[in-house]
Image 1 (cartoon, helix red, strand yellow):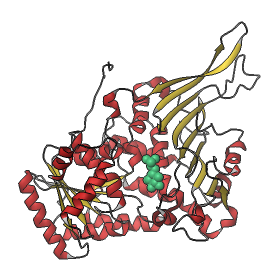
Image 2 (tube, helix red, strand yellow; image 1 turned 180 degrees about the vertical axis):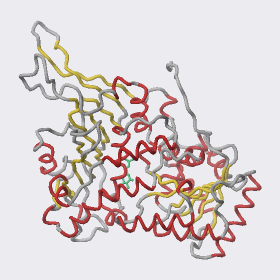
Image 3 (cartoon, helix red, strand yellow; image 1 turned 45 degrees about the horizontal axis):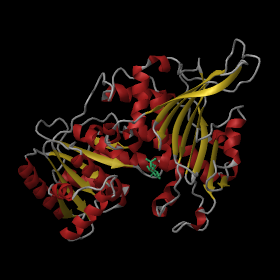
Image 4 (cartoon, protein in one colour; image 1 turned 135 degrees about the horizontal axis):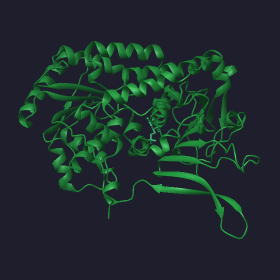
Length: 497
Ligand code: BG6
């Protein structure tokens, strides 16, 4: 039987129309449509709702329904036919020509009809699952065709969801952001980072907030250093077109910093939007940025062997598929505690993990000898979902021997816990509810670009000082990644621990 849940805070989605641009693309079929279906199946959709799918590809309705069925059949349990039928009754498809005013007029008419049919009053969530170059032109057209309701309007609302890449450089990201804001205000923009929707990521904050016994020790008085590991087993999987222009730094940095923030930011006064965001902002503001010199000293980039033979990859590509780096947080809590990060593709196994490594004993009987780090608090985010604390205990037996032990907690055990909303489902609920807590602010997006920029510049203009290394698939990255932490007298924890 499940234990009593003490305190619950629920986000309820508001009735709305959900308009998906780029509905035939990878992101839509891989993530968004299955998430919409998941919400429908789990009865987590708002009271009144409809989904309008928009794409440039001309397809027959029957064909589109077949695609939809294929997209949602990939979800964990095979959906039953009536479920699919019920879902499809809420879905419409409309062919788009994003640059054409006529299309927006047609769209406006259709939305009004759908609003009337489903009893929704101009409450619309636009998801732009399109290339970023289309974000600005689409929002501008939505605005000029009167499809965006001004913030503060009492009868309706408009929200726009976008997903990285937000540009390809600091400059292009700033210009994209500024351009977007000509049509929509910050309070209407929902920038997705799907890591924030992961149950286990949210659990880190919940654990800290509710159990001060841990958080009280998460500071430079107790913690020696922090390790963040984001390993993926997969390589490119046919995504060369996307990844070749991104590289690991652009692709994963937002995820990495979301993990860092929920682990290390000061706890907000509440989990409400503004409290949470301003505390997160303060954390990011405390991170010491890199310069050219620190890029060559504390960043390691590498590419897996065989990457150049992947379909669609340029013969002399220098795109990095692995990154290890160290950063510092210059605030009272973390001053002097290094954060080590390693992330890569083709690492042999998937593992996303945060480890807080406590200091070695400074007094007492163990002071004269090196017993390693006796206490480590680990959150495994995926694929397992666990929390663990290692400690030293006496080894049973006649002698006084000390041995490392681990207390481990499985995060998801009960059946209803297994069917909790997925990351995209959760984030869609939040956006439908108008809660931006889990979405990236303009500040965060800009911070991430400012952090990456010196890396990208050094790699482009002075690649000799930060060479691209190689590593065999299935390894833990190049030897230089080991050296990065070992030169500080520390070691990476085994990713499988
Ligand atoms: C995406 C990246 O944002 O995150 C992918 O574009 C990466 O390259 C993926 O594979 C990892 O997400 P997850 O949830 O599978 O760990």
